[in-house]
Image (cartoon, rainbow, N blue to C red; front, side, top):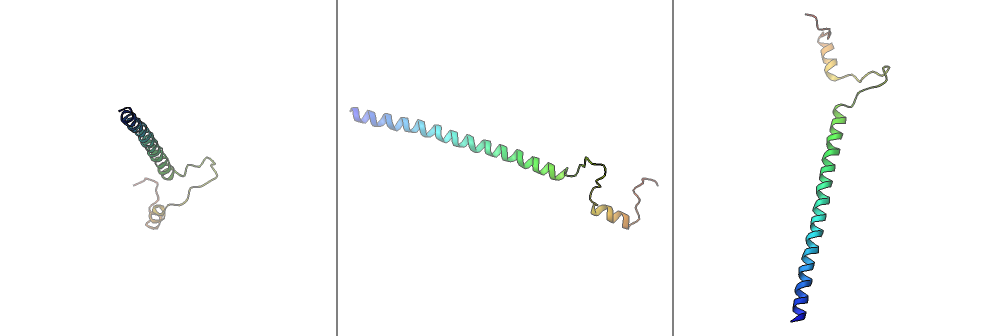
Length: 80
């Protein structure tokens, strides 16, 4: 009788430990996903807002839209 109760206690303790271990693993996965989403958002924002020169001598790269507008005679002055 004592051995059966001891075996049952060991099984119950194992389930408690297994539950804690699974909780720890899922918590780590959750935080990894959160950090990954933040890094992805920062990367995408930095690619969108990539060119903000601090040196006034540096000119931004020419955009394809500007070339098309110049070809079609648009001055960009805003006069009508």
